[in-house]
Length: 258
DNA sequence: ATGGCAATGTTTCATTGA
Image (tube, rainbow, N blue to C red; front, side, top):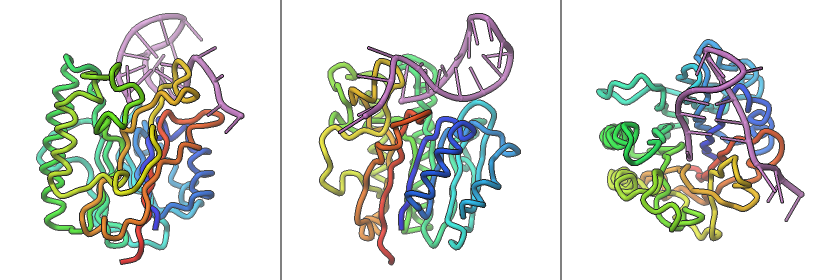
């Protein structure tokens, strides 16, 4: 089966592209980030017509996450947010799909290392680590997928010198990301040989994509039980091409049957 | 075989993203 994560940067704008991608790629489970839609405006019907059930948790203008699952897969225990962490922003949704615990995340951007938003990001990461510890204790087959807004090391940065110490690349952020791995998760992308300079986000400005000036900040983390089932992990950079792309490309893992 | 920000609401500019 295919599990994917994609920051769509407005589901309203990206819906035609999402539907085309669902038809061509046929993912089984999809975590969406930055839907930017109130729940009442979620495009449930076109997604259902494409063959997917959807659970979602959104707000106007900012943030918003969703989990789509192929219609024939069982979905249970849907939860929104991080228990015990008060947060108005809609950034986390979890569900058990076909026996796999899936947590979709949209980690705060952090804006700049000297900003309040950066402190919020680090606190948010700590709360997420606590949540994942509890989730893993209950569900050995755990996948955490989405936009983590951290490039884990310099291989994940087009220009490590220019980005050194900047938001998305700073050492405290990287430590916060590693703290998630320490819960008992692996970055699926690094389980396999990968091409140099593979990224998941490119700035809309300054020819970011044509020049491949990108960062790898979207990830699928897997528990050991799912690492054992994982046969591939890749980034679909084709989805960054063409008319009205999101600035993020989808990340995908393939899992063989248990 | 890509192209020089995009999306949103507070809308003809300001804010946010990464």
